[in-house]
Length: 400
Ligand SMILES: Cc1cc2nc3c(=O)[nH]c(=O)nc-3n(C[C@H](O)[C@H](O)[C@H](O)COP(=O)(O)OP(=O)(O)OC[C@H]3O[C@@H](n4cnc5c(N)ncnc54)[C@H](O)[C@@H]3O)c2cc1C
Image (tube, rainbow, N blue to C red; front, side, top):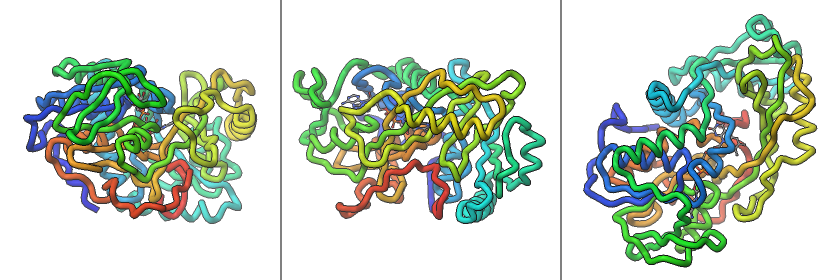
């Protein structure tokens, strides 16, 4: 599938003589605002709460390019290239480290899926290998591998602080002339295209006059569907709740990769001297105005149980735990593109929005200024009434 972004993010889209509003200063909206400002568009970024206050500030910060589909791989390529460039700036850091994922003995379906995905990833030019569990044990002795059937490792991977990334993009946008309005809940007007900013009541800004723009990007995370619905635009996207926690690891056992246990459906990444781990997907759609920010006791107990079996020296108490909202679509591809004249949306990342944000934000910014979108991400591709399965995109299945 084609992902025909220009060779460099520095190449601007065709129509820059326009005023653009970006709603939401998460990783995606912040990237879009930064690109628009760098290209010379007149951009205003509206953030309801604080920069990174949505999913971005609650994310684990895992980044990799281990995607089997060629479009996903191309998006990840661009994103990692941009993370690396930003990492040199001094404000934001990408820590490069391998990403390992595995299936346990007896889980033949996922073991076969991992072998098949790894081979498609390699065909896509990804640096991915299938390793013997013993070789993994030699490299990371604190990771238990004796019950594993298949282990794959992706070398182009790392971790970063998503909130720091969003803040760095916002500062860069500001330095290039963007107006940044934090503490400004915005709602959308469609005729003419504009934004109303003011006191928020269930995400509806009821005060303040309409400010018109040539184009508006809605990158409001889990609030995107309701924000658009209030303006009469329906999208196929449902918010859902996920959970994460941090634990300590005994001294001497901290040399670990980022890993995903496909059989257990949880992930973990090095976090200082310990681990940051998560899954805890709550079945069913969440209400973005009414959800529990703290993690559930069952989640902490279950995840620390499986982590303790997998890694030597895990502390049995969480040092911190929390929940956040992700967004799902019927086909697990994101929604990035125009939903009405001058109105662009970017959401639906199935728990993989941070690692793709530099590329997705750029794509959305280009579409706001006359650039082409990507057909597979067209937010109007659904007929309506499709089922949306609540699942994190990490799930190892037929799609990869
Ligand atoms: C626990 C957890 C772990 C995760 N781990 C990873 C990971 O390791 N790797 C990965 O790639 N992804 C991960 N994700 C997913 C990732 O966090 C998201 O996909 C990504 O951050 C989405 O960014 P965004 O900019 O689209 O949305 P958000 O970060 O949600 O930003 C939306 C912004 O819009 C603002 N907003 C909302 N309504 C309005 C309004 N009316 N007016 C103005 N502003 C508004 C919000 O306040 C918010 O700041 C994780 C998510 C969670 C919850």
